[in-house]
Length: 117
Image (cartoon, rainbow, N blue to C red; front, side, top):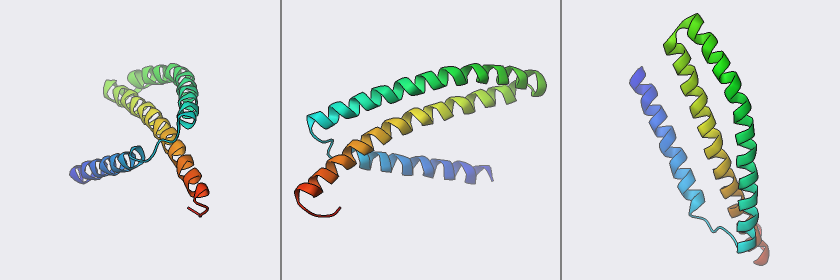
């Protein structure tokens, strides 16, 4: 059972990597689009940093409660889960910004060619 779970997790990560590579290979758009995307990404990272600072406080408190109530392994598992959740948030936000600017470039290209995409 454990091997099946690990295999599914690895396949999921490979699929996410393939999707990410597909997005990154698309046209980034013109300089103005890239500038706007950069500003959006900067704001998104600032937003996530602020959110995660608040969440970190609660994570430490809950981890301490788990440590005393259920033991060190449970507390460390909780912290590890919180870390990977935050990492997923950062990666997801960055990929979303990259995908959006590339989609906007594709829409502009279709519009200039007077066709639906």
